[in-house]
Length: 597
Image (cartoon, rainbow, N blue to C red; front, top):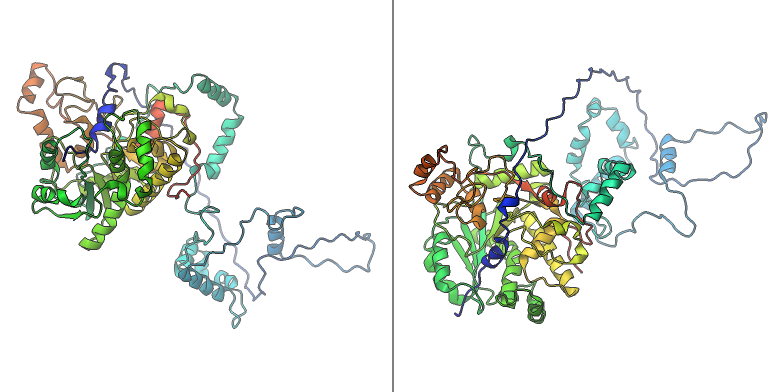
């Protein structure tokens, strides 16, 4: 083997040049909390006794609307009988029916779907209709419910839905016409109202024009508002260890063009394959199997030799020739190649497919799965059961509570840096974002999030490649997805110069980040995802035996340069640090989890 691919070092070296420490601002004080609202007086409502119900005939869902064009008679005419009052429900339906447009029938209503309805859902709907329209018992089902005292409970609706068992949002309409599970934040009434207020505000127009003139060079406020530390520093030592199963997925494919030798990889494998005890699913060609088995020993692993070349994976196999052509478009073609593009772009597929196969072969249902670069653990450490289940469960729970995004729609990324301000005006049509925001060494989440992320990743990979754009570097695609769909991503940022608990020592031989001496800065997430005891032992290892003497020499408190914890940052917050608080995500032509066709 002439050389081996580095799964993270190329991208790492590109990003590490952005250490402009002197230009970073110190964090200010968080703004005062708003005053609590005055307590409202208690109001007691008494319900009137409902009248005894009687059976009524079924009212059709869409009654015909009759238009009476006859002239009205005078009041004095006694020959016209008094008009019969129209049913109130029919009047409401008539008001809700849109006005007719000549030549168009049922305008504004999606065409009926030709897809077959799910049999289980159809059976539940049939059961509901039989209850509502029982020919044996002509009494309307709603009248029977209203006659029951239990129905006066406002929570009875949930019980009725649970009894029938039908999903309220289920539909056989194609998702391209209507997807009830993909409701964007800006579609809700409060957001629409807020946008309308901003649009009417002259001050907002002035700010928007100013921001456009300065071309996106909008700094994040000098006094950033940090999340509540009690929720963001979420690790609670009193919480019991969760019973969560975690899977790691990785791969190793020798390539002709590589920056690292086999000996370097063997040295790095001693920090990954040997000490980490978490279940591992590993892709490699057959000739590498003896090396992986020897390094892994008796630790749990499944080795998959299906692919001799990463470009043979289903999402990439039709692009062999195009990847060869794409090499000419690469600004770093001297040390990149088509094989390396394939390794990088195969990661989402490897993670999703490896998770499914590991569950089948191990007979285990995994709660979380993460991709970890095979050569991504390069420093000595004391980690074993990594990532720590308690840390993972707490992180995803805190991110979901903070953002409002369900846990199974969140992907964890380690953040390397805030984006360049020049990308404030970036949009989908500009192609993959060439910056270093998310690290590609480690990412993952729950089953649904992994599936949706892989689907979206390859959708934009195919879309941009069809437009003749360079898609060989995974970080460029990751940055783009983070910017287009920020509500689905969160992570931790080591170079957070605005974090209130940052180190006051400054950068030195040992202190290489705002959070102290944390080993190799690109891999801070590994320490952050570890068990509390293992983090402490690894921090001791990084400090060395003379750390306390150095603190005494400089008259500093004990642990001044010790690696420290930090809080979670949602992608929205990270992007607005560079783009400003008025930034919002660009429009997308594809939805999250939608395939490109």
